Amino acid sequence: MSISIEQADYLPEQIHILAESAHKEGFQHIQRLVDEYQQEKNLFNAHGEFLLLAYDDEKLVACGGLNIQMSDNGEPSRIGRVRRFYVMPNYRKLGLGRGLLQELEKRAKANFSALCLHTDGTSGAHFFQKQNYVFVENHSNYNYFKYLV
Image (cartoon, helix red, strand yellow):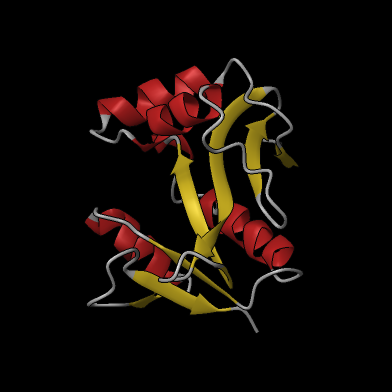
């Protein structure tokens, strides 16, 4: 296994394989990534935003992006939002997700003081809790939060 993590300038054709894999698990967020990207609703190209792709040699095996979390009054904040995070099942529990998230956090520090995200699944919740994200009970836009220090 030879993993590389790269910032995406465009969505590669292999993104459809990730979307199909996620769909088989009942997740639609990678298909939403594709749809929003094609519709130019979310290109991860605002200041401080990016999309990371993880490859095993030439095979796309994971992705994770960062957007600006807008404040309640619609203004940009110093909080980044982890979006469209997914690791193919055969690559879980090998440190790839942790490495991808660490790279995302490292790059985020230049523009954000904290990160937030929303996850519904218990496996996702467990993963993010292990990475020191704290559960937020009553926020309308996210349910996990972490200060970048």
